[in-house]
Image 1: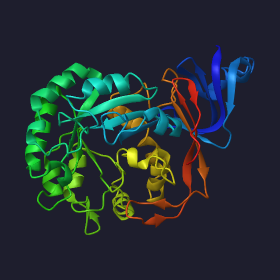
Image 2 (image 1 turned 30 degrees about the horizontal axis):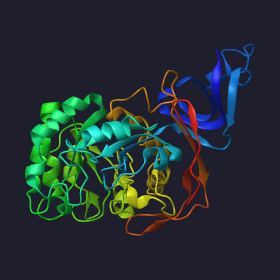
Image 3 (image 1 turned 135 degrees about the horizontal axis):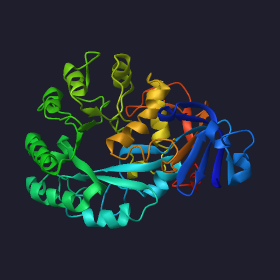
Amino acid sequence: MSIDLLVRGGRLWDESIGMNGVGDVAIEGDRIVAAGSTAAGPSSAAPTAADRARRILDVTGCLVLPGLIDLHAHPGPEHSRYGVQPDVEFLPRGVTTVLSQGDAGADTWPWFREGVIESSRSRVRLAINLSRAGESGDRPCFEELADADVEACVQAVREGGELIWGIAVNTHAILTGANDPREIMARGLAVAEVTDRPLLVGSRRASDWSLDDQLRWLRPGDVLTYCFQGEAEAIVQNGHVRTSALEARRRGVLFDVGHGMSSFDFGVAEAAIREGFPPDTISTDQYVRHVGSRPQHDLPRTISKLLAAGMPPADAFRAATATPAAVLGLAPWIGTLAPGACADLAVLRWNPDAEPLLDTAGAERPGGCWEPILTIRAGAVVEPRPAP
């Protein structure tokens, strides 16, 4: 067996193949051909992997994960006021797959497909915005109720096929204006039902619509993002996880972090994790305002914040790899180091002296941070971006 690339000596983590220890990953073309002890060959008499490798990367002392998957971010700088270049802002930081949260709608979907999905080294999927305009233009996406066009959105989903994962509906008051958020949610559900797609929902943080009632609208497989926001209608109430959130999880609703600029509160996260309610997926909501931030906002740092909040490492790693891969319907092709999977890897190094971990209100927690060293996307090495 020839080997194009051998990633040697790192601590491999992947529950699906029972790996949590030092080992190697062997890559041929865009596929993983061996991982862990199997990378050295079937017997001591066989040539070593190093002898057969055209290139060797020694990552001793680093953590090797399947390529990270960001289930809520904003790839695509053109025609989206939030968008950034995925190959510049995500890929060098360990993220090989990213789901766009509503950057494009029915009117801008053709541009997004050509200019982002088909033009990026990163693997990009779209949660299409219920609003025809997506996040283009200067006004909130649901300021005009007519923009929440069910027929146009259904047609775009049918044209997009597997590239459009689901429907993005954000009912925050700054996006809905004077319109009833229930009507917007109802229209999003109508699209989801017709197209057999899940919803990615940004909850309303106002007393005019309780989170308890919002959660009753969601179905198995739908995703509530911003799950650890600390403003009104948070999932933690009086120090405990709401009964409605527990019931929603039992019936299959998923909870996603969506950190962003205002949606991660250490107190909420710690209380939820303490009560056995960790997030299903960890995501950044990384967008244009994060470009050049210091410390850099990225998925490894967001994972580190969940660790600081008490989430066990195995659960945190799974929430940025295997679980979002399954949510996107792309497992076991991604989210794993198993032989035959796409050769997407994230190599991270623990920095005990990293800059402080802060939530979006400025609260600080002690502890170090996982930082990206390099990324491998479909077998090709992506060098990290220098720190700002």
